[in-house]
Image 1 (cartoon, one colour):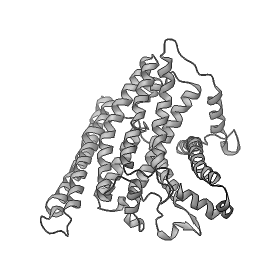
Image 2 (cartoon, one colour; image 1 turned 30 degrees about the horizontal axis):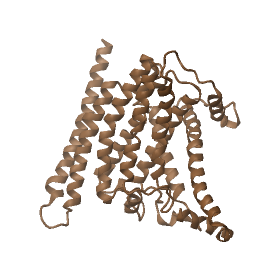
Image 3 (tube, rainbow, N blue to C red; image 1 turned 90 degrees about the vertical axis):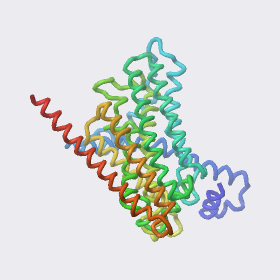
Image 4 (cartoon, rainbow, N blue to C red; image 1 turned 120 degrees about the vertical axis):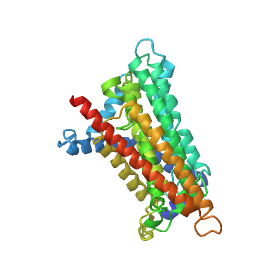
Length: 397
C-alpha cells in the first residue's frame, strides 16, 4: 500500500493534498483492478495466441474472420460462453456441480497474490510465499474431483480420478524441487528469492551451480506442465478416451471458468518458475531495469512468463499424449529421484561449501552424486528408446 501511494504521488503530485481516504481508496483499488483485469484479459490473449501458434505449426492461418487477423474471434467466443445457457444434466448434484468450477478458479487465481511484479509491487509479501503457492494450488484437485463426481457421468468421474492421481503425483517432486532454491535463498519469501538473483543474468539461479540448477529448472517446469493438465500430460481430459474428461457435462459460464482456470494456471506456473529460477522482475542487465523514472520490473516478469507459456504451447502441438502408465512413470521414477538427488547434493554444497574447512563435500559426494544423476537420466532415455523400438516392431508384425 505504501509503495503504491508513493508511486501515485510521484506520478500525480496533486494527490499529496487530497483527502487521505481518497488516496487510500485509489492506492488499494488500482492494483486490485489491474490484477483482476490482467487475470480476465490474460486467458483471452493466451487462447488467441495458442490458436495462431497451432495454425503456424500446422501450416494454416488460424482464426482470420472476426476482426483483423481474427483478433476478435476469442472475444466473440468468450461472450458466447458467458451468455450461453448453463445446462444441468439429470440427477446431478447441483450444489457441487456449481461449486466445482468456482473452486478450481479460486485455486488458479490465489497464487497471484504473492507473485512480485516489482521490488515494492506485490499484493502480499508473505514470508512463506513458496509454501502458500504450493498449498493454494492444491485446491484445484478438490474442484476437479468434485466436478467429476457431481456430473453423474462415468467419463467425468474417470477424468476427475485421473486428475487427482496426476496432480498429487507431480506435486511431490515439484515441492521437493522448490526446496533447492529455498535452501539457496535461505527464505520462503518470493521477494527474497528475487533479491538473491540480483546483479545480472549470470546471477539467475538457472545459471548457478551448473549443472544442478538447470536440471532443477527443467524438472520443475515439467512438473508444472503436468499440474496444468497440458499436453503431453492432458490425461484427465483425453478427448479420444473420455469425451472431455471432468468437464464433459459443463457448458456456458461454468465451462468458461474451467478454461480460464487452465490458462491462468499456465501463467501462474510460468510466473513462479520465472521468479524462482529466471530472476523474476529483474532485467538481464541492471541498466535495463528502468526506463527513466518508470520501473520495468513488471515488463520483464511478463516477458519471461509469456516466453515459458509459448514453450508450453509449442510442446502441446509437438508431442503426443502420454499413456497413464507413462505419466506415472515420469512422476515417480524420473522426477522424484531427480528431486531427491538435487535436494541432497544442494544441501551438502550449501552446508559444506568447497571453501569451508573440513570434509570436501563437493569433491567426494556432490559431484559423484551428480554423475549418478546424469547416468540415471541417460539410462531412462536409453530404456525409453528401446521400448519405443520394441513397440514399433510389435506393431509392424
